[in-house]
Amino acid sequence: MTASKKVTSDSLLAAVLKSLDDDKGEDIVQINLRGKSEIGDYMVIASGRSTRQVTAMAEKLADKVKQEFGIISKTEGKDTGDWVLIDTGDIIVHIFRPEVREFYQLEKMWQPGAATAV
Image 1: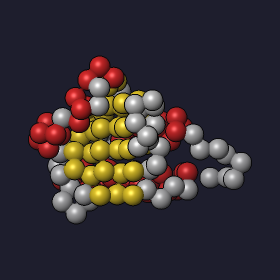
Image 2: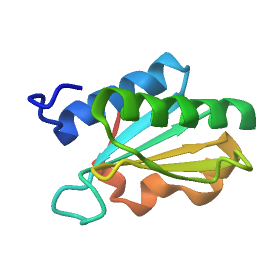
Image 3: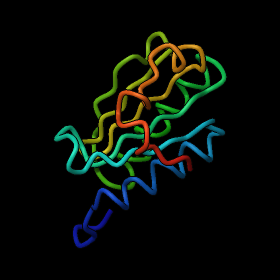
């Protein structure tokens, strides 16, 4: 990234969504958190078919964000691969195995009408 290129949450969101889509993430949902929470501007929730895919998608996403935007993400849950959280600052990304995602139902917790399928 060049110093003159300004990182916006919208450009970061686009890169996150593209990375998850490229890695065959399933049921990708973005939730606009602006005005609802100070934890970030957007939350993205996606599913992977296996612990291996969940972990691989998370690692690739964190690396992409670092390479393209110079942002070092905080990551939790990579060891088990059931649910990985990637915090880029402006975008909070949750990648789940489908059963774990169904159990926690984060979309319902964050304004059921606000979720937008991608």
